[in-house]
Image 1: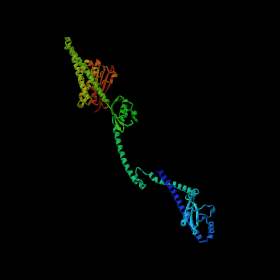
Image 2 (image 1 turned 90 degrees about the horizontal axis):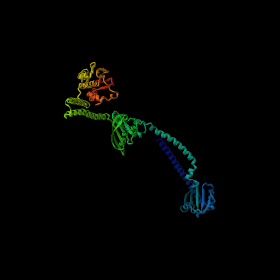
Image 3 (image 1 turned 30 degrees about the horizontal axis):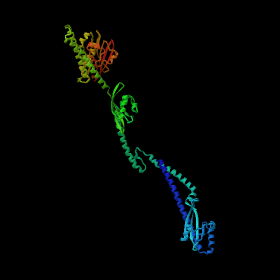
Image 4 (image 1 turned 90 degrees about the vertical axis):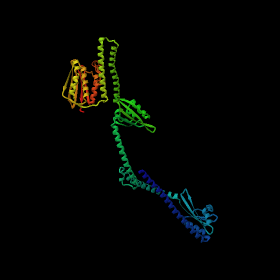
Length: 553
């Protein structure tokens, strides 16, 4: 703006200077030309009057004498156009002037005038002719500079004046531009109405103030919405990524970055290199939604990508949900179904085989009690298995109505010891209860089931003459129940899996002891119900210790 004002002022000054010089020259020329015409006309009239009052015998001498005295050119011409006298040149060498316009006018009208210019010399000559009574013509002429000649003769001074005016114009233009721009440059745009400046700017400043307030309100609203969106997406456990139509990552929440593993990625290929992810995103960018799974770092994620149409191109929204537990539960359900089928099939097959032998009379009479005992044993095992399956299924599906109460674990332990006394005696195992009185808030029947399964396993997998100790204590505000034995122990490679359903370390021994492989799984689910943790310590050949720690509910 400063430059435009500066140039505008300089240009206006230049135009003003040129116009002033031009019109000044025109006025000067008109004044000068008017004076020349007046001077020449007056001289011609005066001489004509004097000539008409003289005798013709002395007229020639008068004209010649006057021509010597005057600076202007005097020409005396006969009525036929012959030049009789000229004070600037010899009359004999001059051509006939009858065809000259001023001579024709003088002969016809009594007076005639004309101006002839010289384009090469920058001069012009004014001719004024008067017809005398004798019919002769008196013509007086004066040569002056033309407009161009006048300007040309004054060129040096005009250049000097123009240069001086230009310098003044440049300085003035700069000062004026600075003075005009300074108030504008000093405007406080954050508070437009507080400025003291040109009155013409008041409507603009008022409107700016109004727009500033509207923009501030909109920015605050957008910032609030952005904070809310950031808070919501930032606290989502699901991953959310929004891609632009060129595949650029517009936004990615913390969960998405954690899952895909590349913070600060600018494009979708930089965010993750897994083929499933790339295929899904590129499909959405092409306008086709997809729903697939992403297996990454031991976890399973459901990956839903939907296109967002923008003109002829597409953006995309990616949604990631961790379904590892769901997948694991589904896998466990399938394994559970397969294991249940297998575990039920085994005793049923044995029962059917023994019954078929008796039915067909193949068995000897003395062998019938053996086969009947086998049927009874397998049926008992089948019933126990079904009962365990029902228990663990109800715990899985929370199909119990827990009635929490204050339960003394020492009393439960004594009840379990009494129930397993015969089994312990048959195997030559001693069952002991150690520690003080410990009370927990729990479900009595489930606590009984947990302790029973722990002691039952400890007796079943013990050595003859061994022992089982149920130890009660309190540590760091936790109620602790430990069941340790002096049995065969568990190898390290099996310890992480013994709490799985139907998992047996020694399948042949489990069959001998009547184990279903669900006991420790029931213990684990009971501990979860009571907000407790289960840990195992074991060494092959030296025994096993399983500890349950109850936290305050």
